[in-house]
Image (cartoon, rainbow, N blue to C red; front, side, top):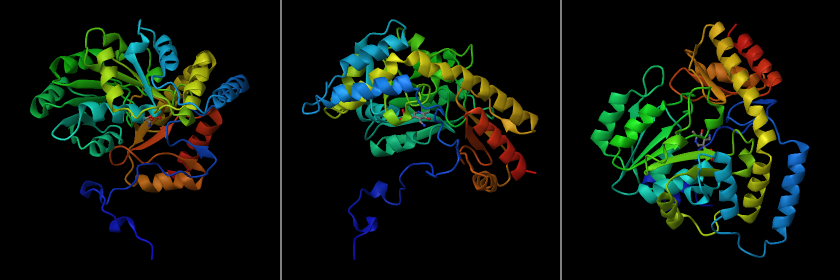
Amino acid sequence: MGQTLADLPLRDDLREEEPYGAPQLDVPVILNVNENPYPPDEDVVADIASSVAAAARTLNRYPDREALGLRTDLAAYLGHDLTPAQVWAANGSNEVMLQILQAFGGPGRTALSFAPTYSMYPEYARDTCTTWVTGRRADDFTVDPEHALAQIEQHRPAVILLASPNNPTGTALPLDLVELICAAAPGMVVVDEAYGEFRRDGTPSALSLLPKHPRLIVTRTMSKAFAFAGGRLGYLAADPAVVDALRIVRLPYHLSAVTQAVARAALRHSGSLLARVQELRARRDETVEWLRGQGYRVADSDANFVLFGTFADRHAVWQGLLDRGVLIRETGPDGWLRVSIGTEPEMAAFRAALQEVTA
Ligand code: PMP
Protein backbone atom coordinates (compact mmCIF):
# COMPACT_ATOMS: atom_id res chain seq x y z
CA MET A 1 0.00 0.00 0.00
CA GLY A 2 1.26 3.48 -0.83
CA GLN A 3 1.62 6.04 1.87
CA THR A 4 -0.81 8.95 2.20
CA LEU A 5 -0.19 12.54 3.14
CA ALA A 6 -1.19 11.72 6.71
CA ASP A 7 1.75 9.29 6.97
CA LEU A 8 4.33 11.96 6.18
CA PRO A 9 6.24 14.04 8.74
CA LEU A 10 4.58 17.17 7.39
CA ARG A 11 4.88 20.42 9.38
CA ASP A 12 2.13 20.40 12.01
CA ASP A 13 0.71 23.70 10.79
CA LEU A 14 0.31 22.28 7.27
CA ARG A 15 -1.71 19.25 8.31
CA GLU A 16 -5.30 19.32 7.00
CA GLU A 17 -4.39 22.15 4.62
CA GLU A 18 -5.66 22.01 1.03
CA PRO A 19 -3.77 23.29 -2.03
CA TYR A 20 -5.09 26.71 -3.06
CA GLY A 21 -7.02 27.07 -6.27
CA ALA A 22 -10.31 27.58 -8.00
CA PRO A 23 -11.85 24.58 -9.78
CA GLN A 24 -10.26 24.15 -13.23
CA LEU A 25 -13.22 23.05 -15.33
CA ASP A 26 -13.49 22.78 -19.08
CA VAL A 27 -16.64 24.80 -19.79
CA PRO A 28 -17.55 27.23 -22.61
CA VAL A 29 -17.53 30.45 -20.53
CA ILE A 30 -14.71 30.81 -18.00
CA LEU A 31 -15.15 33.87 -15.78
CA ASN A 32 -13.71 32.64 -12.49
CA VAL A 33 -10.05 33.66 -12.12
CA ASN A 34 -9.97 37.27 -13.35
CA GLU A 35 -8.11 36.46 -16.53
CA ASN A 36 -8.08 38.71 -19.55
CA PRO A 37 -10.35 36.98 -22.10
CA TYR A 38 -8.33 38.08 -25.15
CA PRO A 39 -5.40 35.94 -26.31
CA PRO A 40 -2.45 37.86 -27.78
CA ASP A 41 -2.72 39.01 -31.42
CA GLU A 42 -0.75 37.08 -34.05
CA ASP A 43 2.02 39.69 -34.34
CA VAL A 44 2.59 39.42 -30.58
CA VAL A 45 2.56 35.62 -30.82
CA ALA A 46 5.19 35.80 -33.60
CA ASP A 47 7.43 38.11 -31.57
CA ILE A 48 7.09 35.90 -28.50
CA ALA A 49 7.90 32.81 -30.56
CA SER A 50 11.05 34.32 -32.07
CA SER A 51 12.12 35.57 -28.62
CA VAL A 52 11.72 32.05 -27.26
CA ALA A 53 13.83 30.72 -30.15
CA ALA A 54 16.59 33.23 -29.36
CA ALA A 55 16.43 32.29 -25.67
CA ALA A 56 16.50 28.60 -26.61
CA ARG A 57 19.92 29.05 -28.18
CA THR A 58 21.28 30.12 -24.78
CA LEU A 59 19.62 27.49 -22.60
CA ASN A 60 22.91 25.74 -21.80
CA ARG A 61 23.67 28.81 -19.67
CA TYR A 62 21.89 30.07 -16.56
CA PRO A 63 19.76 33.16 -17.21
CA ASP A 64 20.65 36.69 -16.11
CA ARG A 65 20.21 36.30 -12.36
CA GLU A 66 19.37 39.98 -11.98
CA ALA A 67 16.97 40.09 -14.97
CA LEU A 68 18.28 43.57 -15.67
CA GLY A 69 16.96 43.89 -19.21
CA LEU A 70 13.48 42.96 -18.08
CA ARG A 71 13.63 45.24 -15.04
CA THR A 72 14.72 48.10 -17.30
CA ASP A 73 11.71 47.50 -19.57
CA LEU A 74 9.34 47.25 -16.60
CA ALA A 75 10.67 50.51 -15.13
CA ALA A 76 10.07 52.21 -18.49
CA TYR A 77 6.54 50.83 -18.61
CA LEU A 78 5.74 52.03 -15.08
CA GLY A 79 7.07 55.55 -15.65
CA HIS A 80 7.16 57.78 -12.53
CA ASP A 81 10.92 58.20 -13.20
CA LEU A 82 11.54 54.72 -11.80
CA THR A 83 14.95 53.14 -12.39
CA PRO A 84 15.71 49.40 -12.85
CA ALA A 85 17.26 49.39 -9.35
CA GLN A 86 13.77 50.18 -7.97
CA VAL A 87 12.07 47.35 -9.85
CA TRP A 88 12.05 43.65 -9.05
CA ALA A 89 10.37 40.75 -10.87
CA ALA A 90 9.43 37.15 -10.13
CA ASN A 91 7.18 34.35 -11.36
CA GLY A 92 3.85 36.08 -10.85
CA SER A 93 3.07 38.61 -8.15
CA ASN A 94 2.34 35.58 -5.97
CA GLU A 95 6.08 34.88 -5.88
CA VAL A 96 6.88 38.57 -5.39
CA MET A 97 4.60 38.60 -2.36
CA LEU A 98 6.07 35.40 -0.94
CA GLN A 99 9.57 36.91 -1.25
CA ILE A 100 8.35 40.04 0.56
CA LEU A 101 7.13 37.91 3.47
CA GLN A 102 10.29 35.81 3.42
CA ALA A 103 12.36 38.96 3.77
CA PHE A 104 10.21 41.06 6.08
CA GLY A 105 7.89 38.57 7.82
CA GLY A 106 8.83 35.33 9.56
CA PRO A 107 8.58 33.78 13.03
CA GLY A 108 7.66 36.29 15.72
CA ARG A 109 6.45 38.81 13.15
CA THR A 110 2.95 39.75 12.07
CA ALA A 111 1.35 40.58 8.73
CA LEU A 112 -1.86 42.64 8.72
CA SER A 113 -4.52 43.05 6.06
CA PHE A 114 -8.18 44.04 5.89
CA ALA A 115 -10.75 41.33 5.11
CA PRO A 116 -12.36 40.34 2.87
CA THR A 117 -9.23 40.37 0.73
CA TYR A 118 -7.08 38.17 -1.50
CA SER A 119 -7.24 34.66 -0.12
CA MET A 120 -3.60 33.87 -0.90
CA TYR A 121 -2.30 36.40 1.65
CA PRO A 122 -2.85 34.12 4.67
CA GLU A 123 -1.11 31.34 2.75
CA TYR A 124 2.03 33.42 2.15
CA ALA A 125 1.95 34.19 5.88
CA ARG A 126 1.51 30.53 6.82
CA ASP A 127 4.29 29.39 4.48
CA THR A 128 6.73 31.92 5.96
CA CYS A 129 5.64 31.26 9.57
CA THR A 130 4.39 34.83 9.86
CA THR A 131 1.46 35.53 12.20
CA TRP A 132 -1.57 36.56 10.16
CA VAL A 133 -4.11 39.08 11.42
CA THR A 134 -6.92 40.93 9.69
CA GLY A 135 -8.83 44.07 10.40
CA ARG A 136 -12.18 44.44 8.68
CA ARG A 137 -13.55 46.37 5.80
CA ALA A 138 -16.69 48.48 6.13
CA ASP A 139 -20.02 47.37 4.61
CA ASP A 140 -19.08 49.02 1.31
CA PHE A 141 -15.66 47.24 1.48
CA THR A 142 -13.67 50.42 2.04
CA VAL A 143 -11.13 50.63 4.89
CA ASP A 144 -11.98 53.02 7.69
CA PRO A 145 -8.89 55.14 8.56
CA GLU A 146 -9.46 55.06 12.33
CA HIS A 147 -9.96 51.32 12.32
CA ALA A 148 -6.78 50.89 10.23
CA LEU A 149 -4.74 53.00 12.68
CA ALA A 150 -6.14 51.09 15.66
CA GLN A 151 -5.19 47.76 14.05
CA ILE A 152 -1.67 48.99 13.35
CA GLU A 153 -1.32 50.21 16.92
CA GLN A 154 -2.62 46.91 18.33
CA HIS A 155 -0.62 44.49 16.16
CA ARG A 156 2.52 46.48 15.23
CA PRO A 157 2.73 44.51 11.96
CA ALA A 158 6.05 43.95 10.19
CA VAL A 159 4.13 43.92 6.90
CA ILE A 160 0.79 45.44 5.93
CA LEU A 161 -0.81 44.07 2.76
CA LEU A 162 -3.28 46.36 1.00
CA ALA A 163 -4.82 45.12 -2.23
CA SER A 164 -5.94 48.12 -4.27
CA PRO A 165 -8.06 47.39 -6.22
CA ASN A 166 -8.95 44.68 -3.74
CA ASN A 167 -9.79 41.10 -4.68
CA PRO A 168 -12.59 39.90 -4.39
CA THR A 169 -14.38 43.22 -3.84
CA GLY A 170 -12.85 45.43 -6.57
CA THR A 171 -12.38 48.32 -4.11
CA ALA A 172 -9.51 50.78 -4.68
CA LEU A 173 -8.05 52.68 -1.72
CA PRO A 174 -7.68 56.46 -1.75
CA LEU A 175 -4.06 57.61 -1.63
CA ASP A 176 -4.56 59.68 1.50
CA LEU A 177 -5.45 56.46 3.34
CA VAL A 178 -2.34 54.72 1.98
CA GLU A 179 -0.26 57.69 3.16
CA LEU A 180 -1.86 57.63 6.59
CA ILE A 181 -1.06 53.92 6.89
CA CYS A 182 2.53 54.45 5.67
CA ALA A 183 3.01 57.15 8.29
CA ALA A 184 1.73 54.91 11.10
CA ALA A 185 3.23 51.59 10.00
CA PRO A 186 6.20 50.27 11.98
CA GLY A 187 7.29 48.09 9.03
CA MET A 188 6.70 47.59 5.33
CA VAL A 189 3.51 48.60 3.52
CA VAL A 190 2.63 46.68 0.36
CA VAL A 191 0.02 48.04 -2.04
CA ASP A 192 -0.94 45.16 -4.33
CA GLU A 193 -1.97 46.75 -7.62
CA ALA A 194 -2.49 43.51 -9.54
CA TYR A 195 -5.57 45.14 -11.08
CA GLY A 196 -4.10 48.66 -11.19
CA GLU A 197 -4.62 49.22 -14.91
CA PHE A 198 -8.37 48.65 -14.56
CA ARG A 199 -8.99 51.45 -12.05
CA ARG A 200 -11.66 54.01 -12.89
CA ASP A 201 -10.51 57.55 -13.65
CA GLY A 202 -9.65 59.51 -10.53
CA THR A 203 -8.22 56.64 -8.45
CA PRO A 204 -4.45 57.10 -8.90
CA SER A 205 -1.69 54.53 -8.42
CA ALA A 206 0.33 54.40 -5.20
CA LEU A 207 3.47 54.56 -7.38
CA SER A 208 3.37 58.33 -6.99
CA LEU A 209 3.90 57.91 -3.21
CA LEU A 210 7.19 55.99 -3.50
CA PRO A 211 9.53 59.01 -3.33
CA LYS A 212 7.96 60.05 0.00
CA HIS A 213 7.68 56.61 1.61
CA PRO A 214 10.87 54.51 1.53
CA ARG A 215 9.13 51.48 3.10
CA LEU A 216 6.29 51.38 0.58
CA ILE A 217 6.20 48.57 -1.99
CA VAL A 218 3.84 48.65 -4.98
CA THR A 219 3.31 45.28 -6.64
CA ARG A 220 1.94 44.69 -10.12
CA THR A 221 1.41 41.76 -12.45
CA MET A 222 1.35 41.12 -16.19
CA SER A 223 -1.34 38.46 -15.60
CA LYS A 224 -4.37 40.71 -15.93
CA ALA A 225 -4.01 43.89 -17.99
CA PHE A 226 -1.28 42.37 -20.20
CA ALA A 227 -3.28 39.19 -20.81
CA PHE A 228 -0.18 37.30 -19.72
CA ALA A 229 -1.41 35.05 -16.89
CA GLY A 230 0.22 32.02 -18.51
CA GLY A 231 3.57 33.82 -18.79
CA ARG A 232 3.85 34.16 -14.98
CA LEU A 233 5.40 37.55 -14.48
CA GLY A 234 4.82 39.74 -11.46
CA TYR A 235 6.89 42.73 -10.39
CA LEU A 236 7.20 45.53 -7.90
CA ALA A 237 8.50 49.03 -7.48
CA ALA A 238 10.15 50.13 -4.24
CA ASP A 239 13.26 51.75 -2.85
CA PRO A 240 16.50 50.10 -4.16
CA ALA A 241 17.28 48.91 -0.61
CA VAL A 242 14.00 46.95 -0.59
CA VAL A 243 15.05 45.28 -3.84
CA ASP A 244 18.37 44.39 -2.19
CA ALA A 245 16.43 42.70 0.63
CA LEU A 246 14.46 40.59 -1.84
CA ARG A 247 17.64 39.59 -3.68
CA ILE A 248 18.74 37.89 -0.45
CA VAL A 249 15.74 35.53 -0.32
CA ARG A 250 15.15 34.88 -4.03
CA LEU A 251 16.31 31.56 -5.40
CA PRO A 252 19.27 31.90 -7.72
CA TYR A 253 18.09 32.18 -11.35
CA HIS A 254 14.46 32.25 -10.26
CA LEU A 255 13.31 33.80 -13.54
CA SER A 256 14.04 31.50 -16.47
CA ALA A 257 15.63 32.83 -19.67
CA VAL A 258 12.40 31.92 -21.46
CA THR A 259 10.24 33.86 -18.96
CA GLN A 260 12.48 36.92 -19.22
CA ALA A 261 12.50 36.84 -23.02
CA VAL A 262 8.76 36.27 -23.32
CA ALA A 263 7.89 39.01 -20.83
CA ARG A 264 10.16 41.46 -22.66
CA ALA A 265 8.48 40.55 -25.95
CA ALA A 266 5.04 41.15 -24.41
CA LEU A 267 6.23 44.51 -23.02
CA ARG A 268 7.29 45.56 -26.54
CA HIS A 269 3.62 45.18 -27.45
CA SER A 270 2.17 46.88 -24.38
CA GLY A 271 0.25 49.25 -26.68
CA SER A 272 -1.81 46.56 -28.36
CA LEU A 273 -2.04 44.35 -25.26
CA LEU A 274 -3.33 47.20 -23.12
CA ALA A 275 -5.73 48.47 -25.78
CA ARG A 276 -8.27 45.95 -24.58
CA VAL A 277 -8.14 47.30 -21.02
CA GLN A 278 -10.37 50.27 -21.92
CA GLU A 279 -12.87 47.93 -23.47
CA LEU A 280 -12.88 45.68 -20.38
CA ARG A 281 -13.28 48.67 -18.05
CA ALA A 282 -16.30 49.87 -20.01
CA ARG A 283 -17.81 46.37 -19.95
CA ARG A 284 -17.12 46.15 -16.21
CA ASP A 285 -19.08 49.38 -15.65
CA GLU A 286 -21.92 48.08 -17.84
CA THR A 287 -21.96 44.83 -15.87
CA VAL A 288 -22.17 46.73 -12.56
CA GLU A 289 -25.09 48.75 -13.91
CA TRP A 290 -26.88 45.75 -15.35
CA LEU A 291 -26.59 43.82 -12.08
CA ARG A 292 -27.83 46.83 -10.09
CA GLY A 293 -30.71 47.12 -12.55
CA GLN A 294 -31.58 43.52 -11.73
CA GLY A 295 -31.82 44.52 -8.08
CA TYR A 296 -28.56 43.04 -6.80
CA ARG A 297 -26.14 44.59 -4.35
CA VAL A 298 -22.97 45.25 -6.32
CA ALA A 299 -19.62 46.41 -4.96
CA ASP A 300 -18.11 49.41 -6.76
CA SER A 301 -15.35 47.90 -8.91
CA ASP A 302 -11.99 49.27 -10.06
CA ALA A 303 -10.91 45.83 -11.26
CA ASN A 304 -11.72 43.39 -14.08
CA PHE A 305 -14.35 41.59 -12.01
CA VAL A 306 -17.51 42.38 -10.11
CA LEU A 307 -18.70 41.13 -6.71
CA PHE A 308 -22.45 40.88 -6.48
CA GLY A 309 -25.15 39.35 -4.31
CA THR A 310 -26.58 38.58 -2.04
CA PHE A 311 -28.01 35.10 -2.39
CA ALA A 312 -29.53 32.97 0.34
CA ASP A 313 -27.89 29.96 -1.36
CA ARG A 314 -25.01 31.23 -3.43
CA HIS A 315 -23.72 27.76 -4.11
CA ALA A 316 -26.99 26.88 -5.85
CA VAL A 317 -26.66 29.96 -8.07
CA TRP A 318 -23.00 29.17 -8.83
CA GLN A 319 -23.97 25.57 -9.69
CA GLY A 320 -26.92 26.73 -11.82
CA LEU A 321 -24.61 28.96 -13.84
CA LEU A 322 -22.12 26.13 -14.21
CA ASP A 323 -24.88 23.82 -15.43
CA ARG A 324 -25.44 26.41 -18.17
CA GLY A 325 -21.75 26.45 -19.11
CA VAL A 326 -20.78 29.60 -17.19
CA LEU A 327 -18.09 29.25 -14.53
CA ILE A 328 -17.84 32.10 -12.00
CA ARG A 329 -16.29 32.20 -8.51
CA GLU A 330 -17.88 31.36 -5.21
CA THR A 331 -15.85 33.70 -3.07
CA GLY A 332 -16.13 36.75 -0.86
CA PRO A 333 -18.41 37.23 2.15
CA ASP A 334 -21.35 34.85 2.60
CA GLY A 335 -23.97 35.24 -0.06
CA TRP A 336 -21.78 37.02 -2.64
CA LEU A 337 -20.43 35.78 -5.98
CA ARG A 338 -17.68 37.16 -8.19
CA VAL A 339 -17.72 37.30 -11.98
CA SER A 340 -14.68 38.21 -14.10
CA ILE A 341 -15.23 40.44 -17.12
CA GLY A 342 -15.01 38.46 -20.35
CA THR A 343 -15.82 39.16 -23.99
CA GLU A 344 -19.24 40.59 -24.86
CA PRO A 345 -20.64 37.19 -25.92
CA GLU A 346 -19.34 35.69 -22.67
CA MET A 347 -21.04 38.39 -20.61
CA ALA A 348 -24.25 37.91 -22.59
CA ALA A 349 -24.09 34.21 -21.72
CA PHE A 350 -23.54 35.12 -18.06
CA ARG A 351 -26.50 37.52 -18.01
CA ALA A 352 -28.81 35.03 -19.70
CA ALA A 353 -27.75 32.19 -17.41
CA LEU A 354 -28.17 34.32 -14.27
CA GLN A 355 -31.65 35.35 -15.33
CA GLU A 356 -32.59 31.73 -15.94
CA VAL A 357 -31.15 30.48 -12.68
CA THR A 358 -32.85 33.14 -10.58
CA ALA A 359 -36.15 33.21 -12.51
N1 PMP B 1 -2.81 39.88 -6.11
C1 PMP B 1 -4.14 39.84 -6.28
C2 PMP B 1 -4.99 40.81 -5.54
C3 PMP B 1 -4.68 38.88 -7.13
O1 PMP B 1 -6.01 38.82 -7.28
C4 PMP B 1 -3.84 37.98 -7.82
C5 PMP B 1 -4.35 36.93 -8.79
N2 PMP B 1 -5.57 36.42 -8.62
C6 PMP B 1 -2.47 38.07 -7.58
C7 PMP B 1 -1.99 39.04 -6.73
C8 PMP B 1 -1.49 37.11 -8.18
O2 PMP B 1 -1.38 37.19 -9.55
P1 PMP B 1 -0.15 36.61 -10.34
O3 PMP B 1 0.60 35.68 -9.45
O4 PMP B 1 -0.76 35.93 -11.51
O5 PMP B 1 0.68 37.78 -10.71
